[in-house]
Image 1 (tube, one colour):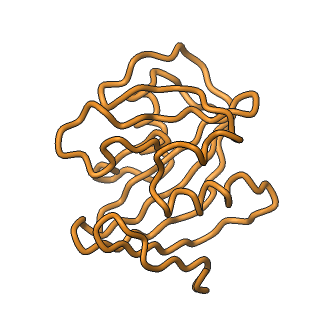
Image 2 (cartoon, helix red, strand yellow):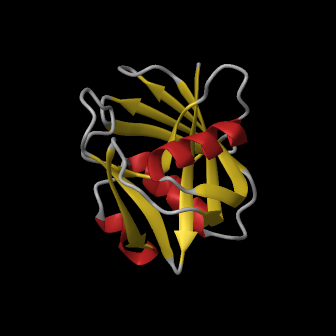
Length: 155
């Protein structure tokens, strides 16, 4: 099972989004996602998130929340546990990303972007500040979301 992280950095009613356009053979080619990547050996999820955000954006996160874990099941991609974070404080200057274009997007405009269907579910969950830590299981056949379960219940 592959371990990854994804962070949605928030500022003034916007999230920093990555439009995946530069990597060859990218499962998320053309999609808009948060910032993150694969965990390395002996790395905790928060250490991975901090490293990945710094590598992809140049920003050093200094305040974050661990929001949930998303289990991805797919018939074409490896199974994955994705640790989901939000952040609202950082230092440093943003730089270009070698995986795509970084852009601040108003929260109200997020759902107009090309997103994975499962991402639409967990974005709504993280936008709800009352939502506690959650476990979300997403099952895909190809690019189609065929099942979603929040804390074990079908949604």
